[in-house]
Image (cartoon, rainbow, N blue to C red):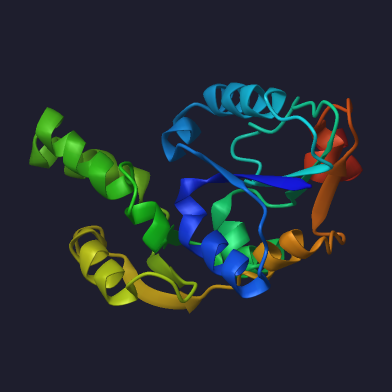
Length: 222
């Protein structure tokens, strides 16, 4: 038996992949707000894993997420996760696709906007706390290197609603809106057990380390 631990941010895409593949693995959904502090996310993931028994694999639908996966230890099962910096890489299908699109781009997804925290809600909070002028100054500085607002279309959710929701923010900070095609191949591959070079498989009692996340060359740089 396998079990899935996943972030609610990608719930629509994962549920679509589960329906497409006929997979019946149970899913434990994690609060997206845990991403705000990687240590909190790490501790929540380890605590959740420590409660799991009598399974062969735990499929972790997370990216590295600020190194939150570093130091995780599966007890009594194998831990599988994709080689992905974060959920955007998962939704684009590969690191190569992410790098192709990434320069000067800020990404939006229906799932991320559907949760309580996003850059839109954070900007609104800043306006309430500091006023319009100060909030605009802060976010103009934060976004000075960005030129595009890329809306990732994974064929779930209402992309026109995403476009309209992000339009005022994009216009205010001079971001050109574009819809780009997503790719959920990694979702289906993980469900099917097709764990190729795009995935990491951690053995029972083995600790996730920098080599697992970044490879030997990146570890030497770190």
